[in-house]
Image (cartoon, rainbow, N blue to C red; front, side, top):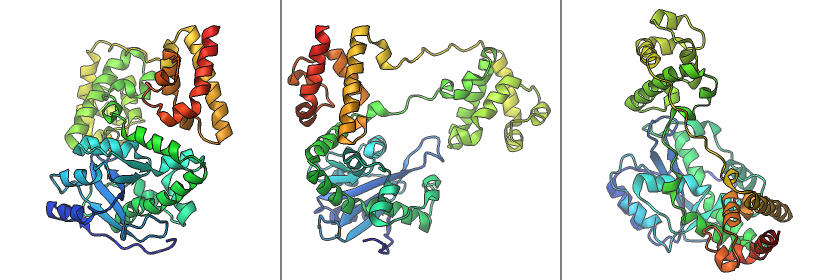
Length: 395
């Protein structure tokens, strides 16, 4: 497959074409999938392209012929047929770093996937150092990705040829990569571990992973602005949010964070004074000068906004005994990860160890009440974890 020229697929951009595609793929048991969104170009990011790849003859082998398809969800009102296809429990969806794709598919179309093979997660379980898709494609297939396309506007139409080629590469090689990684996982005795990790991934409630509501306090620049000027910064931030919503673009493309901070500190009261300032672009002044001066004046009459409640790291809320247990569990995890040549998070995320320290499970049954600990993890790591918990309880 290395060096083979890829056929350019037709872009499916109407309901009839989507129905036809779904019918064509009904007999496929494995489908590679990826999405492209316009988060760098829109205030409300949306899925702009969905890539699908399948084996032409249903051959699950590294040298099977692959066919690629591109679906334009911006041109199709009802994505239910695609959801029925990729959400079927008997159909495995092959993705790379699936978390965000699972989130946006659920958010934009209500699509939930039941079975998955995540090639990045597989690479991490295998202990690979390079787990980004571009690096893996280069290592395994000699394929080079166009890095410029990572910042392209996927919401623009028509799509450019280089966008289509880049998008195709994201799924074209996933099926042969899946075949290769499965063999490696089986040979390494890690296939059962990977299956459990995939099951936990698709069982995640991605509604809980939506980004927090936008707030001025998310700006790191709030730390450099004097307290008495925070009312002005808040007024400027609110103006920028409203303008970004109105123009449907990311706030940073309306005005940079550092420009907001400079204005909040210096507080020019006329457009002329604003134009004479360093640190604010001339284009910004020409486009928004009057509005910025008005926002500054309004902010000057505001009280200093209340500081948000400090967000402590969860472990900082533990009592001394529980914290000691948490530290012992983390030390065990580091040692185990080093022995297996994997990242510590593959053994157990901090959130899992934190839950163990809080609950102090007495046996494997209680340990498996923690959702992220499935049968394989309980069988493999349970005895060590329970031993640490018991020894900690005796002290």
